[in-house]
Image (cartoon, rainbow, N blue to C red; front, side, top):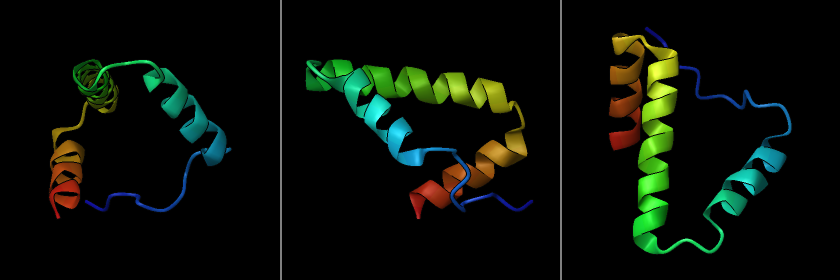
Length: 61
């Protein structure tokens, strides 16, 4: 299983701006909770345990 780590988001800079804006005004705990919810929502959307395991390993380094 190969994980796509190449740029794959149209207007990646625009998405990054939206991500930062979603965190604006949040405390560290609120920001961490937002990140956790986002990860779980996207993991559910992907739904493939092999892909998710590969992503976890890639993120862990």
